[in-house]
Length: 495
Image 1 (cartoon, helix red, strand yellow):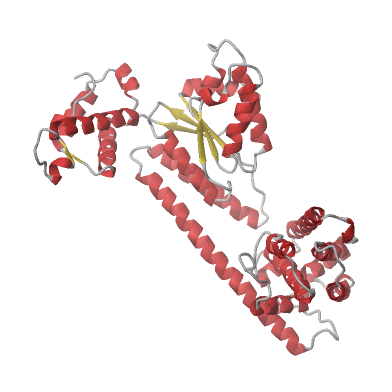
Image 2 (cartoon, helix red, strand yellow):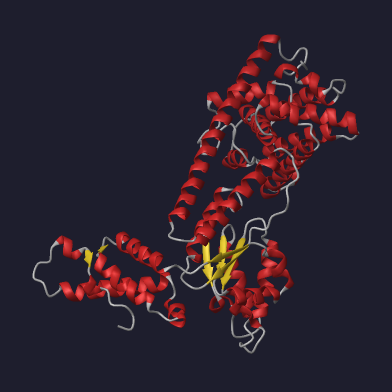
């Protein structure tokens, strides 16, 4: 590869492109079953094995080059998806433990090239040669970043090439023979004696164990974070049906991941959702938890929640609406876009089609960013059905409906107590009894206007004001008086 023909940016891009080719080759090996037996012996994923090999090759080259620039340092640390040699964050790559580990890996027979060779024999093709040449193209890109020749570095690449090409030509052994008892049986005569092979295997096992320990710790931490989020969900007052639906969704995603790891068929899933229910029933709170849960499950990269409605999306003239939608969606990429009262986007009373423009733009961006964007639309049940029927692209993307029921009077009073406790107040039983009477006397329309938890928030804020007006008349109120809301403070709407 004539790297001097390319700029630094082009070489960096080409290095990444070559890495993606290696990832694709490994993906095919895994899909076609060539990794199954080797993976059971090595106890790690094929991606981890690839990244360990690529990082080791680059460290070996770095050791032999005359000097390493910052660009080359950054290239080595950032190229692979995982970081088995723990290079990221290091000021120098010449740490003895890192170099020793890399040298041991380089000295071992390249397992992925061997598997490609087995595949070539059984199916025809040149996967082994393509893998090898692609890996060494990455090394040429690394050297070329300095736009100068490096004889020692080039000699290292040539040595690696001659070491690897022998395994491309080794096509007479089956996978079971190569991994019998967990030890590679192919030995390059003249490269390593038996002692060196044993040391290389021991070093490889140490690196593998460190990866496994880190993976186990990361998995345990992730499981704890998911459990904490589900516990937050469980502690919400009411919403029993919602909690059950979210827990079932989490279980479905977890099992889907398990099936994918075992190369079992997995149904396509849409993670977009429709929340139906009256205002104040906890839809935004649950959406925020869903965003964080999706992040921990690997569905989303960021996990942020971006709230919006018609007023932020729909403009008063043609063209601006699409711009507004793109700006809001771009803020939500990596997380959840929560559109409250989404049915208002296509309200027949608006007298223009700007809402339809918003929906069309939204559907397109959902498709463009389907791998890292989840949209949750919310509103009244009947209106949301009309909204989804307004665009065929919506119907096909939203197939998960979660209904949020109105809170009972008892649940509303429990919510009030939680709000008060969070703010450092206690609510006397007399105050709760008085509010209960007011709630039970509400007509259906009054209850709808009350707004569930939003109405409770209004009552709580009025109680704070009433308490302040009462206590200001006292010369020196006690700590208990300052932190207690009494029956006198509990004035229900309309009293």
